[in-house]
Amino acid sequence: MGKWIPLLSDFCYQNEFGIEGSFTIAFVRQHHNDWGTAQDHWERIVSRVLDTEAIPTGASGTEAMFHAVRASTVIIDRDHKGRCPHCAKSSSKRRSATLQSKTEGGQ
Image 1: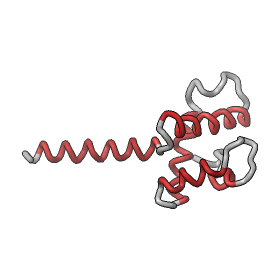
Image 2: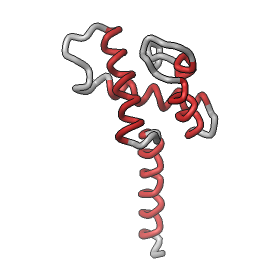
Image 3: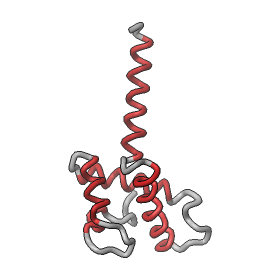
């Protein structure tokens, strides 16, 4: 999935996307300093954004990736208050499954 999606670690340094290193550090910390999980979730988020209206029609591959990366950071920072949307979705599914099993068990 992430062959073309930039590595989070690349954002720790000056990069063409203008993403600050503090974004990467905060995102990785949310994942208990597990760079592999953070990278996996980052790639899932960016790949979903690539298939939205955030990407201008007719954008080249490089331009589309630029917009997807920038939009992803905005989504994480603004819309999810710095929290990983993939983690939030996963924990919501777990809570729902736990609630369902409790109600089915009569508890």
